[in-house]
Length: 504
Image (tube, rainbow, N blue to C red):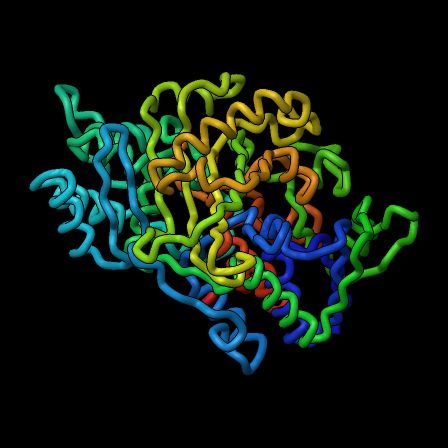
């Protein structure tokens, strides 16, 4: 039985902890905050509840596998899971709207043809077929296997972009794929919206990000009863059932090195806790910035999604009046000025133009004081500074933060009838809140091949033997499902050692 110290109680770290405990190891989690879940949080006030991190679950099989492998109770006995249908409603700049059914390729084709004109669905279906090729080429090495020592294999983009123009060149970015291959500005905006939802600038995201709409429209979109925080509760309870120990309100200030490998952790009060392995579930940029792990020889440390510069602003809206019965759970209101929005996302860009917003209307009675009220969240992707910098531009200018929130609410009116007339109060959360809860202002993106490996996160085994990275800043990257996969990979590497070749 090995002693394992886990830094942070995020979803990836807890997933690793539960699996390691089942394997017979003694696992203790040290979390600087007073609660678990990392970025999967809930804001509550006056009987209203809001998910302030992710609001929907994709690839629920990741957490089904976690619960099967760590106990007798399957996931569905621990949380209520329902498919969201329609999966999403989209409102475009010209006022056109379309609702896309959940996990139905044929239904999506029909819906796009009806809303955008005949042929739109066929073009989108042809694009998804190419996205499927990219998924098939990258799924196992980028999601289910540890990163190899030589990551040059991921330098080439797996998306088979069409060759167009006189020079027969392929598109170099996701935005270019949309413009060249979809033949409709609204379809291109639909594709851009998937990148923005994951904190990616479509003008710089690689074509391989085409797997995002493919995953959603193939495997479906799910809601957890009580909100995504209920999933964090369930994972935490599973850890406790497997005898994982948690120490909250305790900051880890260093990883102890002995004999050329990780041998424990140092706490803020100076106490040293010995361990045979250390799992770092906190964001890798924060671990390096705060020198929790040594990095005198920077070239030895892996990339940690250093291209990510975006975070999220979330506006929680408490509304009087019941949600209409046929309201869409998720509506994406696309920006009327995409050029201005992409300028905003560029490093140092101003907050110009109306943002693309994602409006979530769960209709969950657990999130409202009674049936005569509604809880709505509105989210936008925004610039959030350098990953290694502790400074935060969002905390110093409350006036323009509120002005930006005003623009978000104005956009959300396309999804919520009479929104401003129904508004009781609102709470604005910015990258400053993300920093306070997780140690970084950014929200990590999933791992993608292409762009010379610039969007590959940290490998799970650190350069220091005995130290492992889990969570959204580690392979295979950001997103709730990806974080769960990272926990499975770390557990496999510790239990099976260097011979571990990935999840089965």
